Structure formats: structure tokens, C-alpha cells
Length: 262
Image 1: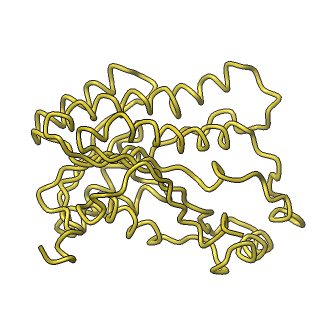
Image 2: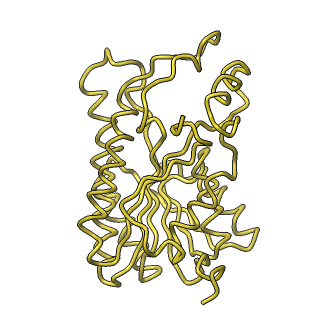
Image 3: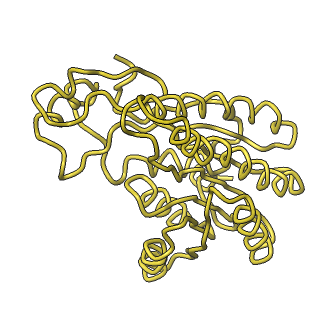
């Protein structure tokens, strides 16, 4: 097979949790453009339907489905529906995230528990369910979308001279750091079935509402001198989803412009 052909996702079925957000939107586009039959799922079904409509107009096979990651029955129903519709699952991208418990660390335990339930416990459950289907076909790729904040602490200098919060809650750092090692664990137990599990840790995404001073200071902290844009994840997602990465598992790949390498 020609090396470029190994990057094709034609004939593969993919699921992306979330799919309408900053990184989710380009993940969906990457999978669909590479030829995968792509499902996107979250509670925000109306936003996802718009994404699916945009992709179908471009000639891609994208379907929006309902998913409540806080509800185990909803996860099972999604699994059943995709298998009933397509008969298989080749790629699972765990991208959805809740932003509970983001107001510092002086919060009730209940707020941290809500966040952990969706961002950790539900991650375990959806991975386990879809891995069972991948086991039957003895192949699959699971990609967890982490964050460079799961690899480093806070760079306080990025926020100097702005009104942005410079001391966010520890929960995001805790969850994304845990996701990296969960990916290694899952790769260990699923490797015998030829199921690969990897984590991608993006850097900060530039948005119009960010103060210019923050953008300048953050960009100076990276080796490429800029924040992430709307296409920077497409290559790595296509690579890890495809046969081009057939011998890569259990790794965390920062896509952060060199932020964590400094």
C-alpha cells in the first residue's frame, strides 16, 4: 500500500464525543475529510446537527446523536445505536469535557465530584463499552483529547497585565493529567486485541475574546511563537486514527507549538 493511502479512513467508522467546540469541530472535519463515517454526540444536539449539516453539504458522512455523559444508560444507548447502524466502530475520540468546578479550589466537594463524574468516570465507561466492540474485530484506535495543562503547571506570567483569571481550579489539571496515564493503562490492557490508545494534548487556542497582551505573552512562551488555530489538530487526529500509526500506542503527543518543550 502506498504510504499516503495508509492515512485514508475510508471504510472506517468513527465517534467523536462533543464536536462543536474549538477543538471538536476540527476533529470532526479531519475524520470526515479523510473518509470516515463519522458520528458526533453530546447533550448539545442542536449545535451538533448544524455541524453535521455543514459536513454533509461538503459531501461527508456525518451524523449527530444525543449523548449525556453523566448518564450511564445514555452511554449504553449511544453504543447500541452506532453498532446497530454501522455494525462496527474503528475510532473513538474522547473529546467532550464539562467545565464544572472551575472557580478555584475553595468549592464544595459536590462540584469537584460532578466534574470528575463526567471527565473521568464517564471516560472510563465509554472507553470500556466501545473497546468491547473493537475487541470483536480485533482492531481500533482510541484517542483521548487531553491538554498541555495536564503536563505542566500554571505559567502566571501569561496573565500579567490582563483581567483573565490566573489561578484556575486544579480540577482541569488533575483530570487532564490523569487522562494521560489512563491512556497508557488502557493501551496496556487493550494492546493484545490490536486496539491502540493514545492521548493528544493541545495547547491554548486563540479566540477573539482573549486580551492581546495574553496572546502575546502566551505566544512568546511557545517555540513556534503563536497560539493554536482551527486546523492544527487535523493532522494528528487523522494520523492516529489511520493505519499510518499502526505501531503507535500508549503515548501522549503534545500539539502545543512547543509550549511544553521549553
